[in-house]
Image (cartoon, rainbow, N blue to C red; front, side, top):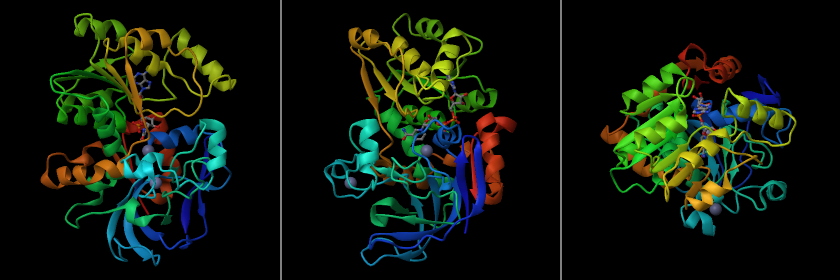
Length: 388
Ligand SMILES: NC(=O)c1ccc[n+]([C@@H]2O[C@H](COP(=O)([O-])OP(=O)(O)OC[C@H]3O[C@@H](n4cnc5c(N)ncnc54)[C@H](O)[C@@H]3O)[C@@H](O)[C@H]2O)c1
Ligand SMILES: [Zn+2]
Ligand SMILES: [Zn+2]
């Protein structure tokens, strides 16, 4: 089969790879009909995630048709059309039972590798390095799905791929980001990053009762997309974000702050340069500029909801502000399977159409070009759907 394989920083190739096979009775084999590139893939592409190996197949947002199932699979059959959740979850451990699917205690075959980085292990994630399980990803024609009963969601044939594909990741991720803000109704929520995760965070914050959402980025068409959802936008190249947020909230700061940017935040000034140098010199793995800004801006007693991905270590996190302002910091790899039934209902009822985020469609054979375009945010690229 054809698959997108990682070789080095900024070096991914579309190549032949072995067809996947059932290796456990709970597995299923999927023929991919649509897949996409996530902001998290860019961290791999840029070389900021440890334990990738040459030839690894990337991709964790995908859907398709079930081709084959193992003897123990009960809820899906060959021919079913399904979306796959990016965290691989067993459904039985204490974490899965609590709905914390991305913390699954059983799905990661490379537990020890992760202990060195995280002090414990979390769920495996498709195509996301060996410490996350070393599983081949879904930017491919076929993929093996372990724990298929938990990781596959059947979708109605009436809904086209583009309306349901993002149940694999970015829609539940944005929803999880907003839910973590503990909204009661009437709040002001600031969202850093108007990429796909930010877009779904903005819409989810409104769905969960926010009165006002302030969206921050500097890519014009992404800010425009945020505006269409009803957000007030701030271009961080044009205004002092902290001062502006304070002014808009009469000196209090937003009730909740969502970081939908993560480890590769941009900042043009001295502090941005400081972060970049330390990251390149491996003195820190992450550039936590947005996290710092969110902590500093958040209202006293408020919530900072971190959905942008962090991988290792960051410098100069304002612990004093976190502590003295009594902030709640919440974060996770999204617990996709906790939300996807509810969100599928919303798509079916027409309450939201997730395909608004798609800017480009390409054949799978052009995935390498897709990575470049998505990284550079070129040609108004917000989200690419790839068709094998
Ligand atoms: N927690 C999860 O489960 C989960 C799931 C999916 C993605 N993610 C993470 O979410 C983040 C966003 O993903 P995406 O697909 O939207 O990526 P993306 O790269 O398309 O979007 C990131 C956006 O952040 C903006 N940005 C950069 N610096 C900024 C700053 N200083 N202030 C405000 N905005 C800034 C960029 O211009 C860009 O539009 C990534 O870190 C990704 O790894 C996490
Ligand atoms: Zn993702
Ligand atoms: Zn589990």
